[in-house]
Amino acid sequence: MIKLLSEFAAGESGKIVSVNGVGKIRRRLFDMGVTPDAEITMRKKAPLGDPLEVTLRGYELTLRKSEAACVEVELK
Image (cartoon, rainbow, N blue to C red; front, side, top):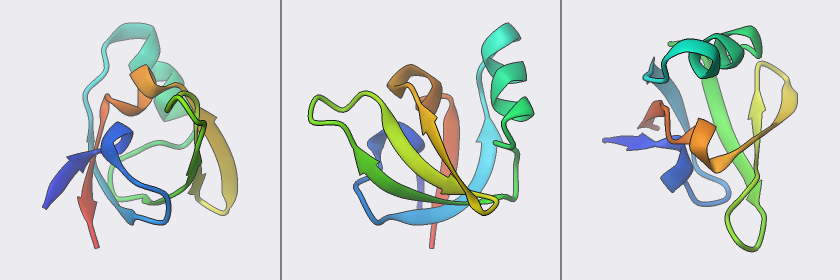
């Protein structure tokens, strides 16, 4: 099942399938290591859902909900 990263609940994990952002957002995500085939785990969400904290490539990364909506992930 493929899901947007912004729709994940805390504790869910999967493998990044694609990054759909354009321009600066796409480039920023790639620079932070958000690339296809990388394993990603949702650690926690802020009470209003923005920002999100994920574990990716051995480090914690904080993303805006709008950035996370550009990332498609296949659930484990």
